[in-house]
Length: 201
Image 1 (tube, rainbow, N blue to C red):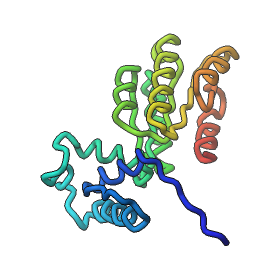
Image 2 (image 1 turned 120 degrees about the vertical axis):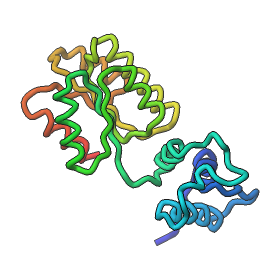
Image 3 (image 1 turned 135 degrees about the vertical axis):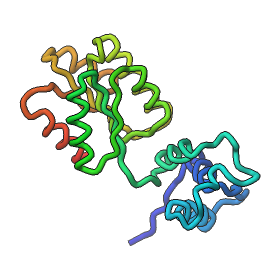
Image 4 (image 1 turned 60 degrees about the vertical axis):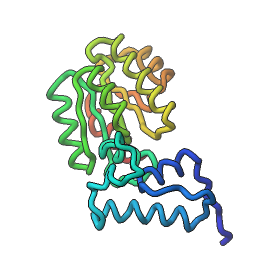
C-alpha cells in the first residue's frame, strides 16, 4: 500500500502550536508536528499541570482555559462529544439532556436564542438541536441563520438539527434551505429517530 500524504491547513497548524504553547519553527516537518501533538497529549494526560494554560512568558495572557478547550475541539483533539439543546419547554430539554448523556455526550441547554447564541459563540459543538419556535418562528429562523454563519465562518463540522411540533412542509423546506442538516417533527418516536440520526453521523 502506497503512503498517502496528509495536508494540514495553516490555520490548523497555528492552532496546534497555540494549544501546545511552544514556538512554531520556521521549517515544519512531520517530526515538528508530532512533537507539538505530543506536548498537547502530555497536557491532556496531566503529566504537565494545566495551570500552564496560559502560563509561560511567551503565552498570551488573554488565552483562557476555556479558549484552550475550544481550540482543542477545533483541531479535533478533544475526545468528548458535545451537544447543545435549545428549547423553551423545560421538559423537552430535560428529557433530551438525559437521553444524550446516556449515549456519552456532554450536554448544554438553552431556553432562548440569546443564551443559545452566547454558547454557540464560545463552544464548538458536534450537534446543535434547536426547536424552531424559540420562542417564536421568527426567532427560531434568526438563531438558525446565526448558527449556520458561525459554523461556516469557523469551518466547523457541527450538524444543525431543527425540531418542531409544526407539521407545515414549508417549515421543513425553509430550514433545510437555510442550512439545517436535519428537520424533525415532534411526532411519535421522534426522539428515537433523532438518536438514530446522530448515531449515523
